[in-house]
Image (cartoon, rainbow, N blue to C red; front, side):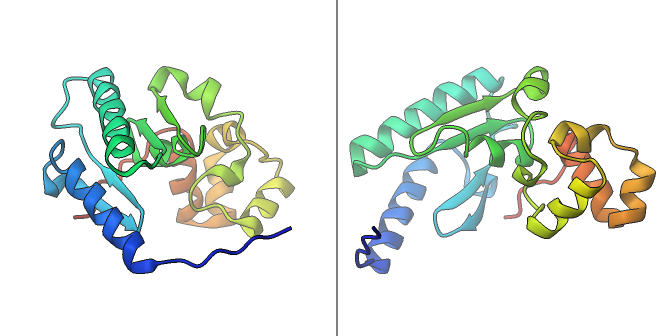
Amino acid sequence: ELISLPCDGQKYESIVCEIQEMVKRYFPEDCMEQYSIDECFWNGSQIFKNIDEAYRVALEIKKEIYNYQRLTCSIGLSYNKSYAKMATKFNKPNGLTLIKPESKDKMIYNLPCDKLWGIAHRMSRRMHAMGIITLGDLANYNSHWLRKEFGINGIVLQKCAQGLDTSDIFV
């Protein structure tokens, strides 16, 4: 049974703005990319000494959001945007997931290929027909055949699956 509740868009946007202002105490504004109304990327590579320090700050941010707004959030931490985006999905609705380079085989490579940002249902079906079921399959597939089938997007998706996403945030 579906229960539909009214949405107060202005209130939602106001709360999101308040949370972003709070997070700006931890990150300079030029380190943030707004992705959607309630989703953004924060690049801490020039701020934190290491990923463990970033993890501690993420815990502080989660605690502050909860104490201030009584809301939970999911945060994904990684060394690139693609993995950070995937990490946000691991422990919803109140997760904090860290993906380090040495854990990609265990955490990423067994995921279905459509868990990668940019692979939708149609492309996933085409990949399955080629024997590409998991992100590990995609990461290790022959790049010549990926390019032949998907063009440059096949190579870009393979690099992302391998953890070689070099895209920066857009400010």
